[in-house]
Image 1 (cartoon, rainbow, N blue to C red):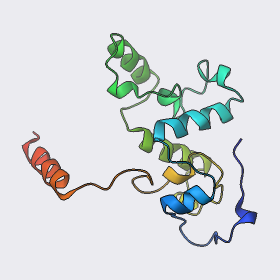
Image 2 (image 1 turned 120 degrees about the horizontal axis):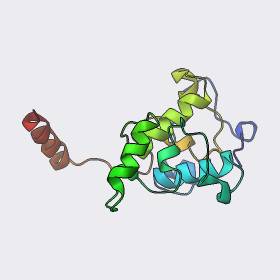
Image 3 (image 1 turned 60 degrees about the vertical axis):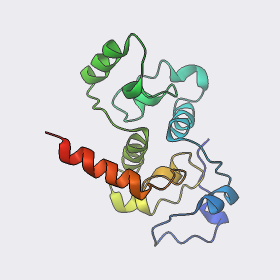
Image 4 (image 1 turned 90 degrees about the vertical axis):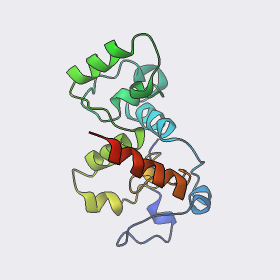
Length: 155
């Protein structure tokens, strides 16, 4: 259940709310990958685990990830068929974190400022709504250099 516990905190709704892992833990957010946060959000949205598989809200950015896996990184034999189906539904490849951020944007009626000021801190998507995600390890300088090299080699 998504709960707004803003009244029980001292966080101001006038500033961008970004919390550390420790602060998130105090608010009841256990470290979890974005895929798990999507799964929890979907379970709440359709009112139960058994209804997630048959979700009919195909335009939702979380739809491709609703079962707890990333179809864009799948190694299954039916990957091409799945991706073709998602493309037919209007989905483009994105990361689970990006999908969560779009879900938050949809919840806030397209207002980016509202997303950054969101007070629904009980929502499983809340820690992921801005930035790279609270549980993501920082990128090392070596990783940054490798990414720059890969980008310069791209056509």
